[in-house]
Amino acid sequence: MSASVANGLREAYLKAVYRVPGCAFTLRETPSGLELFGGRAFAVITAYNPRSEKMSDAENRERHAALEAVVRARGFSYAPSCSTSPAGTWREEGLVVFDATLAEALELGRQFDQHAVLYGQGGRVTLAWCEDGGLERFYPHPSRHEHEEVAHGRERAE
Image (cartoon, rainbow, N blue to C red; front, side, top):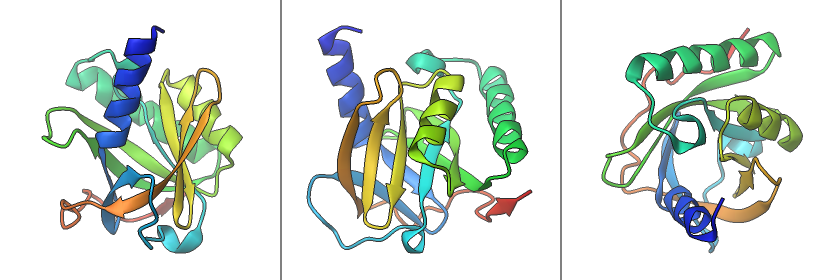
């Protein structure tokens, strides 16, 4: 991946709005005091648009169902998430996977051909790059879109 493509992807991840049950947040370099999920470890993972290649709605739904099946089979608790560009022109449904390790989150991201996943605990969120395992640490900040709920916002444990 070229440096300009990598920088563009990084910028997209940093500008994105991450909607999870109970809040919507963005990533920043300064503390906000926002603690997500009561300090519980979590990962935000999608199967949509592998390697940032736009797929059809039907293909994305199939990939999402496959991700949900894998997460359920591994025994993780999870809930729906949705990540968007600030203007809403790019939207990806995903899952918040609870109590996975960083290695497990990266494995899921790689399995579904993603550039990166978010991994967090408490007041810190890591942008974890699937290709090389690179980690960038940030703080979650409430989004001005925080009032928008994720559909079906209940945690599932199978």
